[in-house]
Length: 264
Image (cartoon, rainbow, N blue to C red; front, side):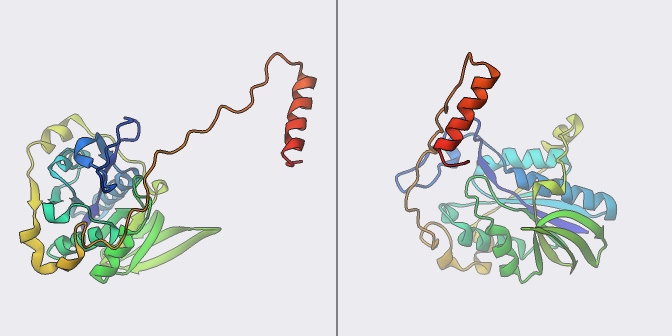
């Protein structure tokens, strides 16, 4: 089985470093980045499918040359191949443009299953995966929390839903979007890291896939989404702290506060 996993480098939110240009676009090349959490889950799910059915796992990302670090990490986890889709023409792409660019690159690959993370922690839109499936004309299942059965011809998956779950049988080729419950990402191994830096990370540019793109719908100019405002999340206050009270007085003070806020 040939499996393609689409991943994204996202800002490392623990670093406290965020760079934005005058148009409100993240300067990813100036920030420490990590592989998006849901995308790591997608990598692990793909590796488990390969272990069961054989085949290959190819990692694809759209990003600057710095994405090589994330690709090496994915290779060290056990992926077979890695492809970076990059170029100045793609800078500033929103979800619609990004999905079109990824579709243009993946059209020329062999695949049975495409797996993406549900959503990225920087945009939080959960749009690229479904848009990619639509542009490639693939059946898709989103919010997958378990692969119950897998064959070359079909998959049976459990899909998380608002008040329950769906069990869905889907023919291959198909696209899945993964949530964190689907798999626990494995750690890189020492030998995996060694091998990862011996492998080639393929670079795909605009000229390589321009015939498979809607060129008017790529990059910042071809992105229908406009950023209205960007701002730093406001921190919550410390709240009310009660000290040096007897248990009875603690209860009395808490009940008083709940009554004041009309909670009870």
